[in-house]
Image 1 (tube, rainbow, N blue to C red):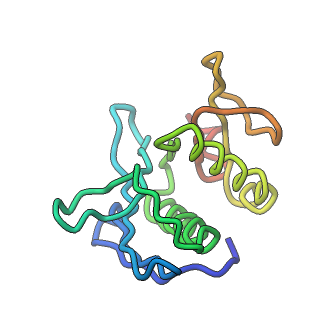
Image 2: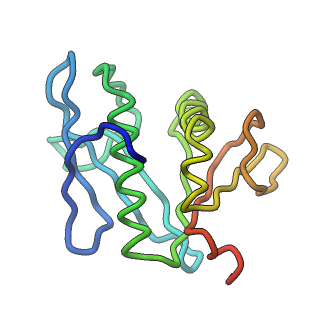
Length: 153
């Protein structure tokens, strides 16, 4: 996505990304993790605040730092980089709460045309069906892969 975002760093496998959110509540460390699932080439995307005490991700933290657009653009940039490193990967994501899932869905809807230039994106509905993402429909999870991968599975 071609939007203002934060600089981030990753470890050598490009599965852990760190960046700082800077806003009205100060500097807050953020973490984006891509973890393998039991399904080949499918990775879960986890995102949240970095808990300094445990070193773990806190995906229930509410930062309210006033920089949501920059934070989401940064997370999107990590997805682009991760897919560049793992071009056959499928990334699954959902919010830690229904409100966050709605927020992610609204962001996907807003930038769907841009996202679809490079990726195929699917939504998982309450009736248990994966389908191509459609603006206005409600989804519980999202699945994204590089354009063309959906044909090779």
